[in-house]
Amino acid sequence: MSKLLDIHAVVELVPVSRVAIWRWVKAGRFPAPLKVGNLTFWRTSDIEAFIAAPAPSPAAVAGPDPVVNRWAVMLAG
Image (cartoon, rainbow, N blue to C red):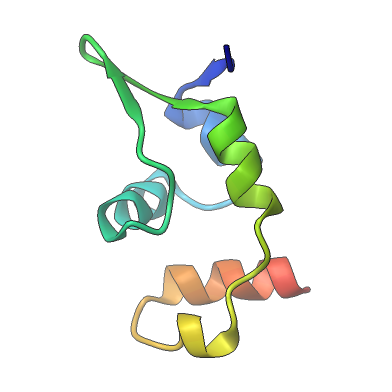
């Protein structure tokens, strides 16, 4: 079983804000969290897979979402 991470641990691994994480979840660009009672967690394996995935192409991130564009630049750099 994969270790579970809360939002604070996730933002340490993925250097964007908590708001960006939730925006990505809503847009389907980030792994969906698990709910345990009132708490929200992500599987470590899901976050590691997200980090290891190839950076999206510039055409895929073109658009009005500056958070996504910034993440693509960070991954490419």
